[in-house]
Image (tube, rainbow over all chains, first blue to last red; front, side, top):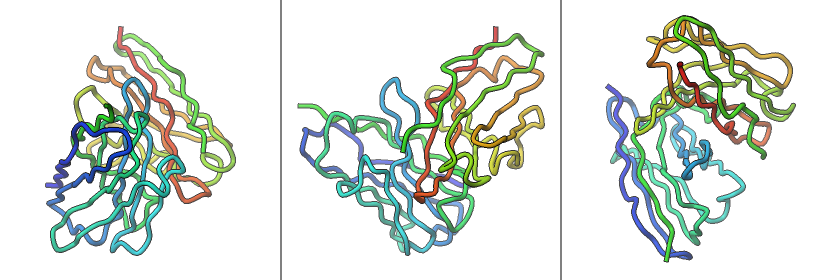
Length: 121
Length: 110
């Protein structure tokens, strides 16, 4: 059974940094693309970043490019999202999702329950 | 990349059919057949309903169907059930190698 468990959310001050983790189990982590998707309060879903299976390529939404870094550790079956220079606009529930194939063009097949990030002073 | 356009809300009675539209551009919906739909109940993880315009993952009832014409896609739910009440999101892979979502549509089952 595929399981994705996000952690690392919390309250952070504007301009600060935070790293989210997503522990994956139930599938071969290294051969599937993974993405982070967020949902701000009262808003729709927003794709944030994706990484191909094996980690050879990463992609980012314009809104986070240069501030966020997605990475994966196949030895720990864990996906990460390092976020820096955070602002109130980054406040959201962050979901990690397993895609249906090696590339980020595949659909988001399984999702975690999400972790809340609040950026506020 | 601008979000795809979905109606904010739709409603229907049990047993009826409804259709949710998703409008994009020739850089996203119109570019490829990588259009997906997700069902999201509050407090739960989103669930993939439709991939590649009209493919249903295992376990998704055939009451759910998808289509696409040009830069617009649609999700149709037939034989509405009360537990279909949720927010539905469309998404598309873009020519910029990113993914874009719609704003989400709240389905109310009357």
